[in-house]
Image (tube, rainbow, N blue to C red):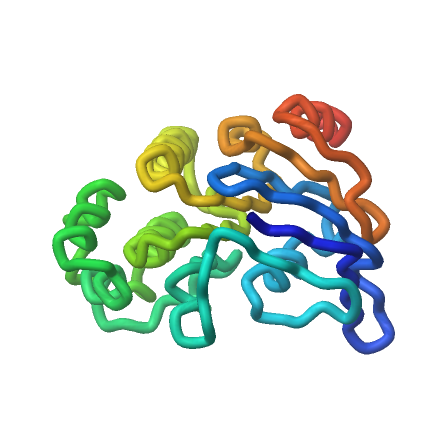
Length: 220
């Protein structure tokens, strides 16, 4: 579905990505992992079309979009939810780009947000903001879901519930899910394929065992 062919990205004089080549299949859950500053978030932004590669190319198959509907086809959950939340209430935030009011209400219930649905999103805790931002993106039913550190601010019970929700929606919708995380607690549960980014390239790919091996090496 998504093919990255020798993709590079340079910001100023800093070369963040050198030559990333990776195939992501339709309906696959792909985990991008690597040391801090290796370019994982940059790669997500390139896939989302928020930045253009300095070299190489990214091609998409089995998905049709243009400038007008791209944000509905590709949903991006940023690392900092404060950049995403702008509506007066949680309910309005989730309903803003929702495919229907009923689906927005379903997600509010699913994410346990009913009791805070009339609160301003910026008044919430970090963990609550994270839930609202993910629910708001999912409400548009994107074909490609890009998640940058989705479990930040979640305790173990919250994290377990979050993973179950994401995987449940993935199974139901067949979306293509690409996740960046440093959270060893959820890495294997959100992964069909893992790619390790190192020195500006994809250094290694494999199944969830690659993720487990990587985090074991971090002594987490």
